[in-house]
Length: 251
Picture (cartoon, rainbow, N blue to C red):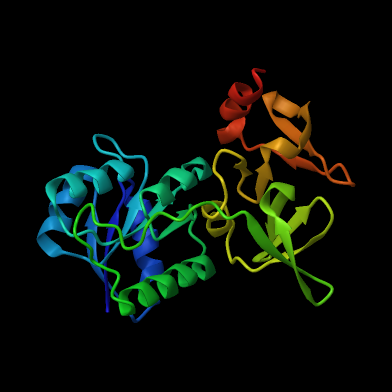
């Protein structure tokens, strides 16, 4: 049984997630915590094996909760970070979060997370003592598989220009080929690539910064990226990523 705690300083967000979780009989919702400090106390006392954790909270952030539990030597549950901002994804996986959900949470995407949590629990990977890693941190993958024309092509990760998700399917565009990825989410794909090269510029797009051909000013101080593929694909930059874009290219 998955014993879940919800941590979010927005009561409506807690209620919405609790409502969705009630549709999964394998999940018992223990309740909710309104901030990071309360979350640390409840995790210590109730020992949930799954915690849905908002990233941005006053006082102690979601990532701060994970670090505080490690400092205190508390057994670490599975964490799923839940936020409206996609730029926390890389840091989330560095903290060994199980998964990363964007608000508003989609039920189908949540079902994938619940399935991953069950498999992790059955494999005996949680809870783990604070500071103890289940496995060594994975090195970024240098090769990826792209499915095209009923074949599995192996490509160098550096040759990937961008990846996008549509209708739950990830499509990868590389220098010489494009097709479907065997990853289920962009978060999962991103976590297996070099974070210094691959950038989640938009909820639906992951780009190779070395394959950006042009930065195009767009409406209301936003930007689009023209990529270095044969179509010169234009990809929107979300408002939350505009600051990083300006810093990256000194705009």
